[in-house]
Length: 96
Image 1 (spheres, helix red, strand yellow):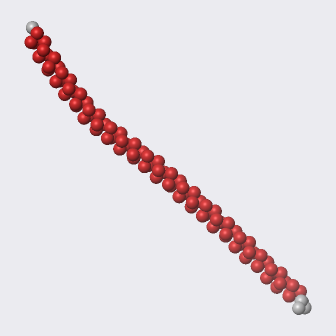
Image 2 (cartoon, one colour):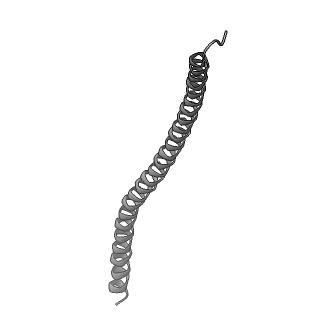
Image 3 (cartoon, rainbow, N blue to C red):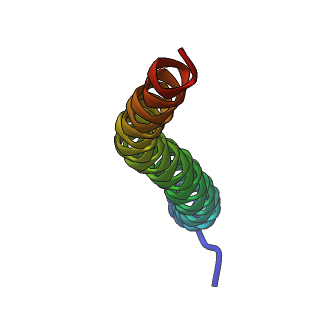
């Protein structure tokens, strides 16, 4: 089987190529795992940013609706105050 030193050289080269291939596949597998974890992490961060954006949007809408209701409420209070003032002024004129 091993008749010359060239045979030993070729077997050694074949073993080295096989080990290099094995370690290359192992390294590629870990690189793919790292990329997959990074992708999942970025999706999680993206989801958190979307949730924060939704909370901010909801808060903004509630504040806008509250401001609209407050202006309507303020107009109503003004009208009630005018009516009370008119009725109160009318009673004072009658008493005189």
